[in-house]
Image (cartoon, rainbow, N blue to C red):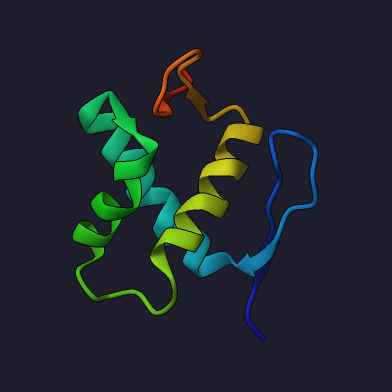
Length: 93
């Protein structure tokens, strides 16, 4: 049976129950991108992750990026840069 993880949401909303393996792949890609670039626009994040995974991922990368990004925000791993429009993200320090 596949291991799953229930994600958190920064606003306390209901998270989603997703594959732990897929979560880990997306999380590693997001953290690597933020580690290299410092800041990234949220709107560009899914494209960056897709480029890194280059067809080695089954499922909607943009959906998984959004779900994992919200979870990482809720856990304090990454932060939205306040008052930025469009939304920008960075590692939480």
